[in-house]
Image 1 (tube, rainbow, N blue to C red):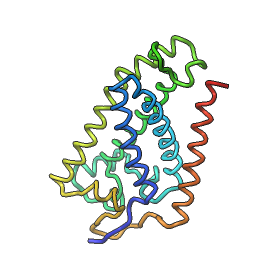
Image 2 (cartoon, one colour):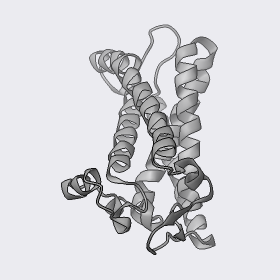
Image 3 (cartoon, one colour):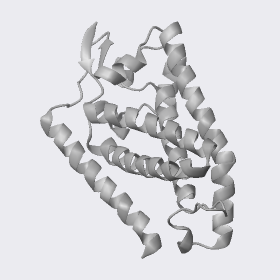
Image 4 (cartoon, one colour):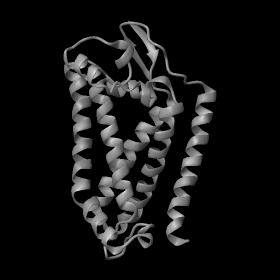
Length: 221
């Protein structure tokens, strides 16, 4: 067995920041009232993190890049048949890869609808003034209903999958996302995780935060 740096620090920080932000979104959304101010803040945080992850998927560590996610039918078939492919699955396996994409895409949809939602009481998304009332009504119904329900289901499924991999396959996925290293049977390329990589990640994150701030300001321009 060989220890290899799979998850670079920016990817790990993204993962845990997103987990906390999504948890905050769910709790504040269920609570309502004064907690909605924090609901919006968590939403903007998720927006920023999603933008960061989109870019980081092109320039980040090897195993965080979109091109290295085993998404093809051949990869899925080999995984289901139990064929060992360490050069493909040192990072996310096919099931995990599709799970990640589903979660990120659904969060992007929730953020998008949240920006133009209105509870017709006190709270409204920052971009509601830019779209028609029909769009606002549709987005609000989706965001508070089906969209939220599916998001909660995806979160629960993700947690259950992590527990299952730990108990049944003895794969400590949480530990790997904490320290970044995994034990693999054959040596595979490690992800870059030096100071320069982390500085680039900081710059990208700041730019993403500024972009989100600009988007939010469009509704009051």
